[in-house]
Amino acid sequence: MSSSEPAPADVAAQMRRRLRTYFAMVFGGLAALVALIVLAGVVGHLAFGDDKGAGRAISVVGGAGFLGYMAFAWWSVFHYLRCPACSRLVAMQVSWQYSILSGLASPECRGCGALLFDSAGSRRFRRVLFFVMGIAFALGVVGAVLSMSMRKHHAAPAPVAHHEGAAPAPDATP
Ligand SMILES: [Zn+2]
Image 1 (cartoon, helix red, strand yellow):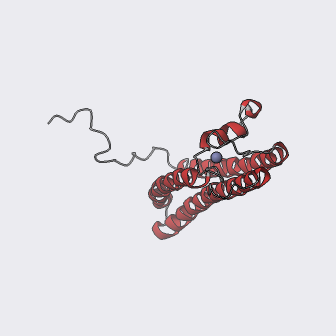
Image 2: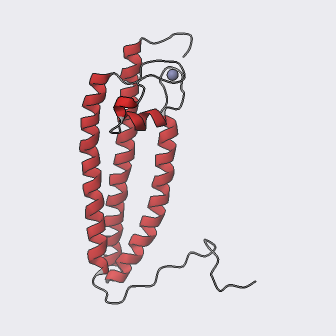
Image 3: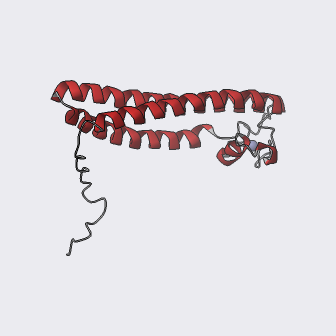
């Protein structure tokens, strides 16, 4: 990469492509996770014939899916949020750039000084980003309402599943 330095405009365009791919992966993964959890609830309900079955399926699939998604999102940060010119990790600069304090953030890579965010592109991208975040938020609300309405059928709350080995029981004496 260092042998043929790309033009500044190219770096910004590449950075935008990387960000687009990153957010598409992260929000697409989130949508897939929500869809998977809803599907698990439906399948669990059909398989066990009651809401308890649905709740069990949701907690198993949701728990495993959430852990997998967190790992995937973490990997995506390190894979995509890098400077196209020098491959330096610029995740912090990205989060600054797309926060309300973006005016204070440097649009240049701290490693090589390449312009990562040209202002016109960033503004347009920020609008798209807020739109996508709105969709993700709406999906989250739908998921929360669905899981709450399923739980409301039971007067007594079901006991929380034990997580063996996660934390020692308070009364456990060796
Ligand atoms: Zn750089």
